[in-house]
Image (tube, rainbow, N blue to C red; front, side, top):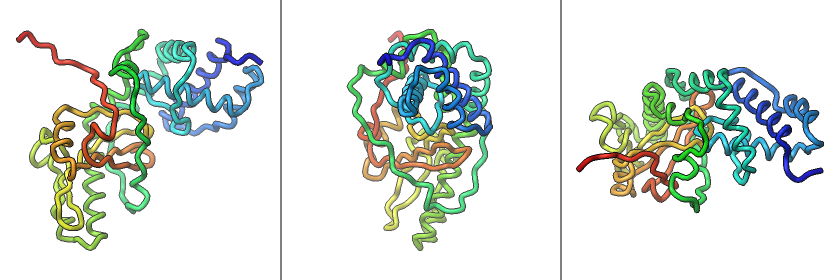
Length: 281
C-alpha cells in the first residue's frame, strides 16, 4: 500500500469529516463508527488508526483556517500539503457547512445552570512553544479562504456575556463552598459595573481575601480553540501576574467546562499578531 494518501482518498475522507462536523454543529447525532465503516470502503485498505490520524490532521487544518472541528479528533499537525488544499477547497464550496458554522458562531447564548463546580474546572492544554514565524499559521492565509468562524464567534457579545455570568456564578459558589460567604457576596462583574476596558472581567478573591482578577474567554467550540486577547489584557496580566487568572470556557453550549491560566498570558500561550493599526503619523 502506498504511504501517501491519494487525492481520491483525501477528497472522500474530508467530505465525510465535514458531513459529521456539520451534523455536530447543527446539534444532530451521528455515529463516528458507522461513518468510519462506510468511509473505509472508499479507501485503499487503510486501518482504523490511519483513518483516526487523518481525521486529526483534518482538525489541524480546520484550526489553521479559523474553523471549528470535531471535538473527539484533537488537532494533529504534520499533514500533507494536499490535505490543506482539499480541506480549504471543500469548506469554501460547501454552503451548508458555512451556514451551519456561521450560525454556531453567531447565535445568542444563555447562561447554563451551575449544579456543581467539581467537574467544571479541568487541566489546561499543554503549551508547546511555537517555532514558526509569528502569524504564519493562523493569522496569514495562504489560500483564498475568507471565513474565520473562530474570530466571528469571538465577536459574539451574547456568548461573551453569558460566559462571564457563568464564571461569576462559579466564583460565588466556589467561595461559598470554601466557607467564605462574605467574600462570595463581594464577587463583582467588573466589565458590567465599571466597563470592559480594565483588562479583566470578574473581581473575585482567594480564600485569604486576596483579590483575584479574572479575564473570561468563552467558546462553544473545542478545548484547544484559539482565542483573542487585547494588548490591554496582555499588559494587565503581566502587571498583575500574581493575581491574574484567565478562565477559558469551552464547549459552552453543550457541556461547559473551563481551564485556568495563571499569571501573564504571554507565559501561558503563544501570541501571534493577527492585525496591525495603520496610521499616518
